[in-house]
Image (tube, rainbow, N blue to C red):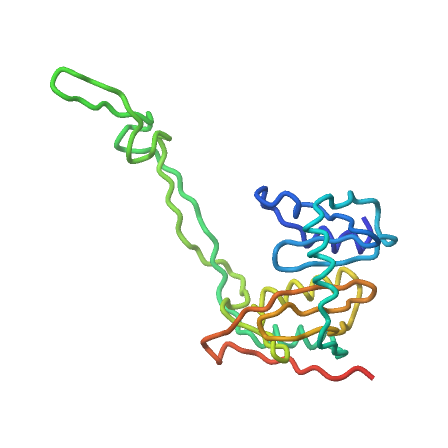
Length: 225
């Protein structure tokens, strides 16, 4: 798997409800992949064969996304600047879920109980453990690691993104071995934004707004000469 194929597969969905997003697909001269948050376009000649998208409506819509450059801008963003923005987010203690499985005391781990009415007796699933015979408790446990705090956003001109989205963007640039990206289309704050990453193009949807201004970290762009 080359770097372009790696990037494509990195942005596929894992939900079976949208099976068409689970693998890259071809439309004309390009291969695309999406996970619902990103839409990546790679020239077909850079990757192995992927099946053609057969849904005409979907094909037309995806092509139109990349043609919506009504306010074309050319601004350069260094990947190091994206990383600097992420590094401004405070670190917090990492917590992981710890599952504890015990036998159900109500049914004595059998999974069923007896229901009795007058001379009638009926067996039924235990309503406490739902017939499993087990009780599962989950609690948070701190590790010795530090992680980036949740709930922070990064603004890029008029667009605002969750910090996790910017982290994924950084990951894609590292996979493609690119140290800067170009902002080639940005219209309204609630509309998609298009980046050029080497020979690839990437669409990201911003969030509409953020209530807490203190959670905003700005990235300043500069016009590409």
